Length: 142
Image 1: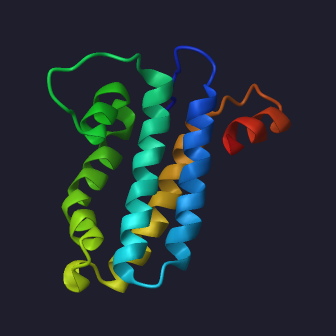
Image 2 (image 1 turned 120 degrees about the horizontal axis):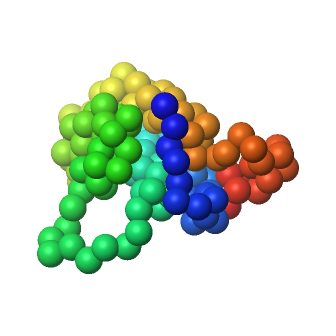
């Protein structure tokens, strides 16, 4: 499974992956399950955006389209991940609204773990192995 970018990974993709890593660190330190869940889900969106930055060209659309729908379209190999995170969007919205019962601690911790796995997978797919480690670190750090 590989993501073939139209060109070398752009700095925005590396920046988005860096922001996702930072968001995951914030999620891990969040004081409530809702905050943890919301931060982790936002990190997943940033990871998806990094893939979209590598795979797509700007297109005018008549109406907004979910990042998860776009991700499944441009990277079918990530379709299961897209469906998984799309299913959690309502829960994230409830958590962001401050509804205490929206998310359990277990759900928040599970999502943080899942987003880390998603990040690892996308990073391996987006950052070409042909780059030397220093170049990979520069792209990944944004």
